[in-house]
Length: 268
Image 1: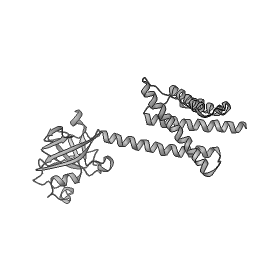
Image 2 (image 1 turned 90 degrees about the vertical axis):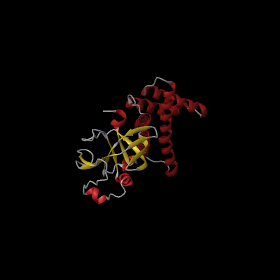
Image 3 (image 1 turned 30 degrees about the horizontal axis):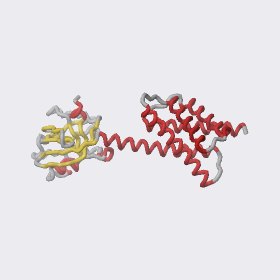
Image 4 (image 1 turned 180 degrees about the vertical axis):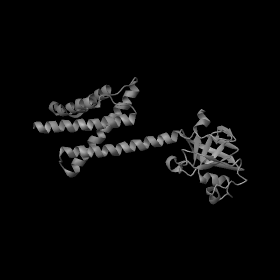
């Protein structure tokens, strides 16, 4: 019996560590003393059956324990922030506990180490979902509607503001906006991919020249040219923007055919 109690306490502590970690990731606030708090929560989970609480009393008791855990683990100045962290913590508690309960209902009783395995698998799944969701939000917050006017063409595309793009043209001394070949082909429809790869500069390319780049493009030269206008979200207008043709495949990472230069908006 003593061994079973110790195992149960260990499993509860393990699950609480996972729950606190997920709450930290989701709320973007690091939990304090996770091991100590997890032991505290695990101890309460063991002694709860001794009170034989039923219905509403049991729910209120569980809420009180969760409130205590959140109050100890996280910093907050406003009650609204507390509620956000509290319900996040409670959500992940319900999620991990509910998954183990559903698994038990499906296959019957199973060893305690299986509980840890199920919790750990679910932890990594939820962590991946949070990471992917945050990544989409981050990309969306740095995404702009871009209108390019160049070579008599007007093109609407999606652009991503890349903090890593700080390229400056050595001739015009202007920040370079990177575009992929799809955008370039819409601007200069009569210039073939073969001639671009062969680094032949067409006379129709406005101020066309090649720039040596050591970071983006693996140290290769990229074709640089000047357009007429670049408009962001139908508001900000940049005259004579400088574009650089990149074959790095950035569109796969940012879901955008244009990488805006951070120095255009924030300066350098």
